[in-house]
Length: 219
Image (cartoon, rainbow, N blue to C red; front, top):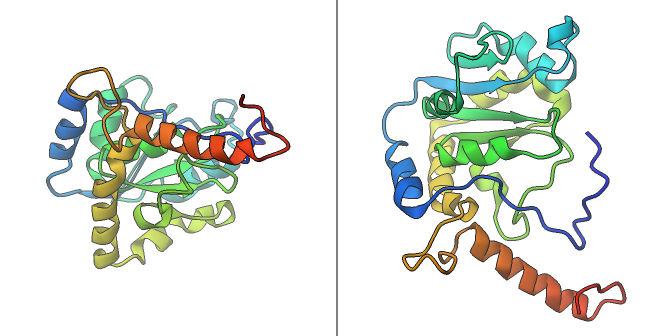
């Protein structure tokens, strides 16, 4: 998917997920507790599947992961309308890794949904740029796999040691609030360190940079 309108030199990416402080973050963290019975979770649309001609990286994943016992792999075509948003979140909370492949959209809400549910995001999208990449160390709490190696996903994830998995889970716990839009106690300002606070901080930095740039557009 070619994204031609985003320019990382002047634009910023922002998280798409939202949660309130009272019913969101604290409740989400409690939901992380317990054993995760699956290695991998994925539920989503497979381009071309309805025409009998699946294509793209998602079709490669489906061909290699669909019948694995420790993998929860469902598509929009094989589970119909039986799995809603809550069902998807519950599925993510049962898995160690959540697949976040490139697809029909030019953005990656799945990464943040996985993070909010304590599931390590596995990014299989070569060209995506993510929010706050210049501030957060994504390799610490995600796994990135090249699209050309999509058929090896299960093997690659099984090769990660339990120690490294626990390190990534802890790093995810420590950073997830950066992706949430959290109301402060007063309800009138961003919560320190949440997504809106991060966005404002980065905008200030970019404004300072643009002030001395011949291509500036802020006044």
